[in-house]
Image (cartoon, rainbow, N blue to C red):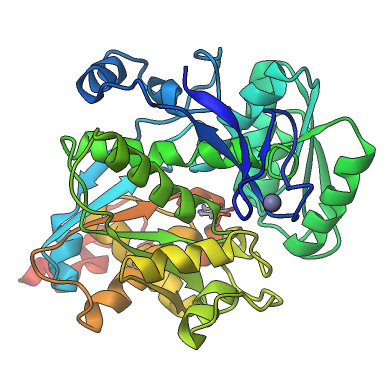
Length: 409
Ligand SMILES: Cc1ncc(COP(=O)(O)O)c(C=O)c1O
Ligand SMILES: [Zn+2]
């Protein structure tokens, strides 16, 4: 297996593969490094195709010496060609990667599967996280499946569906009176005090690797080809950045050929530190106090913001934000054209896709992949007023009265 070390993203200092996440020399974030010098692309592809029906088919590109046991394997979610969505937006080829089709209905199952497997390998018996909701669901479920204890910290004003879909797994659910950035600060302090594996704090370098599998699947599902453009949501910026990393790795290793796609990031107006820095031409993100219905993306001080900015700029892409009304419209547009009901994060992503289409940023011959990272049933308030039910008595007359206008035609 190819996993090699933890390396500082800023100064390249190298560390052993333990529960470490920042560089002792310069405080930069650590990242997993691999040695793929003896990889043969055709053989690597064959091995992937003969692998499991989930993320562990990519075990050779994840931070383990072998394939870990995982009772709740996520991944291999559908990539759907969305012609009706493309048509509505005046675009050519649009694909939707529906990552709500994971065990706890968001892409967070990928990062948590990797982090929990690493926690077990390192001998932890308790896992924990700071979450905007979806991570909480995933940590609680994967800990339950692995037989580990768990503590999950969230802002106490989270959507009820996300609280319920976390507590059901028997975790210790802690609602913190504050926003995500307050929760994250508390967890960073707790990580010094308790012998726990905080998946997105002291295990963050491993956790982040899980998002590369979204890129690998996309490439495989497109028949070992690349999209021209990617549209994806940004909270901390980890998933967005690792989509780029997954594709660059496979380009470098010859598993796929072509160029890195154009990367377009999506945020909500009410929490847009990365989109604001992009618009200002800045390379640092000024922290914001979130106020948006897209609670899963409500990170005001994004750890990987600068790397997300780099990726968007270096690929000729952009980072945009949309209003709460545009988020709701995005949820509806996706549902009506693809049959996929997404949560607010997906509304943000489709809202930004619509914005890019409207301003003519996307060429008619481009192949675009849009990442839908969470499930609509978890954010029901966002869709609450979007419909009217036809309530009738159980008689033909009442049905015909109700639908009289249509019946005449
Ligand atoms: C549904 C959904 N999509 C996207 C993201 C973005 O994640 P990241 O912090 O990796 O940018 C999150 C984060 O919580 C999320 O819940
Ligand atoms: Zn360093």
